[in-house]
Length: 420
Ligand code: PLP
Image (cartoon, rainbow, N blue to C red):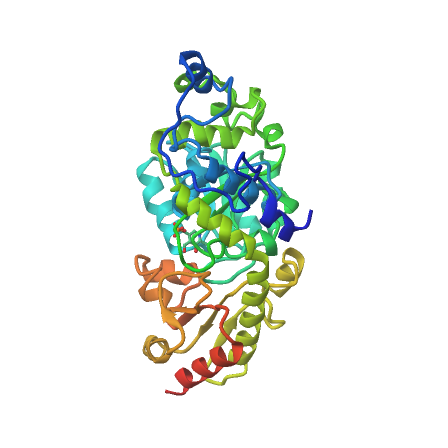
């Protein structure tokens, strides 16, 4: 089925009420018929609802639909993009292990990797997303994850997904890609050998800045990579916290099964069923919106590129952009709504951002309303000067998340702001 059809129909079996819209099951828990029924649910002999921290019928539709849209086998929804990223790593690594991550990451991901994971005893080693050899040189026996963004925020680089995941496969390491900015409709990480994708669904999935959420998707047949893999004993040995369950020996996608019955159970970053329902609504128009976001962003990038005061424009759909070749290979002809441009100084950047009228100054992306951000003073404020340069965020950088307004109005507003 085409992606637009999947986004409208997948994962929803109508119940006795046959509602066209997926119902919101706003409940904390579910009644068991008797003790045996309850016991069977807990041992997974009967896979069904126990408690919404673990499963919920509305969230289940969202997970199935998103997994199918991404071309994966199963998905676990979480309460934010950050928790989806944390769960993908916590499901792979433990104290004493390391992960190898691209430097060009969303600021929150960078701080999670460099600082928070360190306190859990997991070391993050960073590579330039365009230097696969540097990435390979950081790998050792304790490396459990290779992590990068397909389309990076805010530096707007396109990763060479096939090369990076081939190196991960050479060493039997799990590759995890944050596909938030690209979305499943523009870029297909599993087609290029990636194992796990993560998304902040707070962005293009909800689409109108309505709800915070995340999702982690497991590719098809990941069990083959995990079974007998000495890097991942926790998938191959009995889990003492789950009656000795061996995740690769049961007929469920093992990465998602462990994330649900270990991480969601014990850490509990579960989405509200209402938010899952909002994401289902957003998915219905995702591919239509992504085409429009991309068209607007390309036109705005072309305008900015022609403007003398602008030092550099970063948008992978521009022929002049160093990511253009990767974008042609990994994207389906549209390149999402995120672009950035650079002016000479911090003062100039501040003046331009303050002078816009149509663009909202917001620390978010992927809204239908256009957003303008100065990363060095907001999303990347916690980073040192060296970290800022290393992850591609100079002080004169302005990021735009191009919305769905008329492109004529978007260009006119940025033009008057540049002229102030
Ligand atoms: N990944 C990317 C690429 C992001 O841009 C963001 C947030 O901006 C996140 C992850 C974190 O998502 P959330 O805000 O839903 O926790």
